[in-house]
Image 1: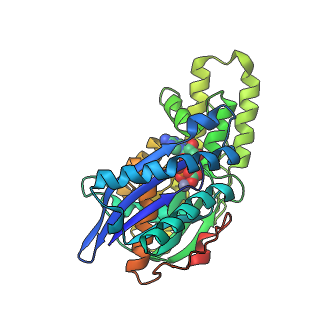
Image 2 (image 1 turned 30 degrees about the horizontal axis):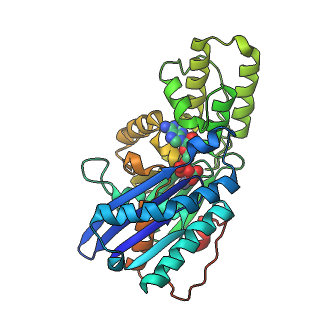
Image 3 (image 1 turned 30 degrees about the vertical axis):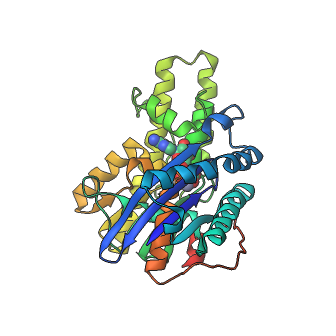
Length: 348
Ligand code: KG4
Ligand code: ZN
C-alpha cells in the first residue's frame, strides 16, 4: 500500500510517500518539506494567517516533487493521509482540504490522523543503522514546541497518558529562554548550539517538579528564573555568560526530561523508551537518555534526525499503520473537519 501524507499543522508544509507491505517494515519512498521558519522569524513566532497562505502556495508543488522523486504516478497512491489536528485551524484546513480534494480526484480514500501519533510512530521509519525500529509496548516521551507528554504505548491507537506538562512545553521552554538570550526564532536549536560552548553548572536554575512523585512536568518557573538571570546580567552580558546561561538552561530542561522518562519506564515495568518530537533532536537529551538507559539495560529509540521535527512522512506512516492495524480505512465522502485541540489519548 502506498500512502501519501500531508502535514500542515504549523509552520512546515510536509508531503511524503510511504509504502507498507504485509511482510516488511514501512519504507519511506520520498519526502519533501518546506519550512516557513525564515518567514515567521521577523515576527518572533508563527503568524497563523501567513502560515495558512504559505501552505496553500507550497502543497501542490511539494506533492508533485514527491511523486516525481518516488517515480510514482498519482494514480498509484492508495490512501491520502493528512494531519487533522492538533494545530493551527487555518493551517490544518489547507492540508485537509487539499488531501480530500486529491483523494476525490484520484478516487481514493482520505484519512485524517493525529499529529502526535505521527511523531510517536516516526521511530518506525528508523533504519537498523540508527537506533533501530521499536517494538510494542514502550514508553514514549513526546517533546515538541506544543507538547510534553509521557505515554504508555501498547500498540497502534493504544495510548495511555502517564504524565504531561502543566504549563509550558519543553520546546516552548527552549524557545522562550532563547528569546531572553537574544537568540532568533525558533530558539531551541540556536540555544542548543550556544550551549555547546557554555558551562552547564554555571547558573543554578530550578528543576521544577523533579521530585514531585508523579510524571508531570512544569517549565514556566524555569523560564522566569532564566529571565531573572538574564536581567541581572543585563545588556552587558558577555558572550561567555550567555553561553553559560544557555548551557545551564538546557541542562535543567534535559535533567527533568531524562529523570521523568526513566522513572516512567521503571514504573511501567517496560524496557523500551521512544523519544519523538522536535526536542528529540537535542544532543544533550540523547546523550543523557542513552547513558541512563545503558545503566539500566533499557533501549532508547529515536526517529531519524530529519524526521524529529514536523514532516509528511510521519503522517503517511501513521495513516498506513492505522489501516494496517484495522483501526481505519479512510473515507470517500468528501467531507472533513479539523481538530485544533485534540488530546492524543482521546483517539485510543
Ligand atoms: O515537533 P516540532 O517540529 O513542532 C511541534 O509540533 O511543536 O518541534 C519544534 C520544537 C521547537 O520548540 C524547537 O525549538 C524544538 O522543537 N527543537 C529543539 C531542537 N530542535 C528543535 N529544541 C532543543 N534542541 C534542539 N536541537
Ligand atoms: Zn510536531
